[in-house]
Length: 124
Image (tube, rainbow, N blue to C red; front, side, top):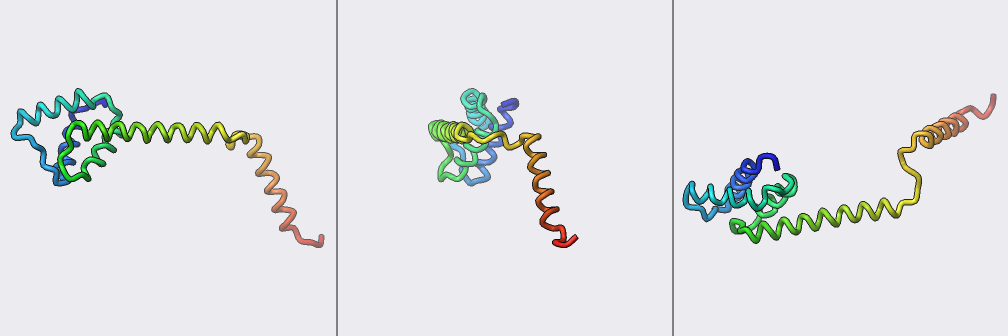
């Protein structure tokens, strides 16, 4: 993340807005918590971190570090499975590229000729 403190502060606001009260009793503890989360989750991609925060915001209690660790692992597994599925689909598809320009132009000409022959009057 480029600005991890901003993301962590937004996560804290998200949890508070969801009604999850943090077990922090002052500015010093909140600052310590933010630094800890930045050290631990600052290297994550913003989308991955935001998905984890949204998921944990629906919980009953304020998330602990092991809750966030579990959510991160789960999201990373989901992402890896999705990548693996797309790679398998691409490997299973022996058909030519769908965006082959020459093949597309030939197919468009065939369709136009077919429609012209179909729509021409029977008599001439």
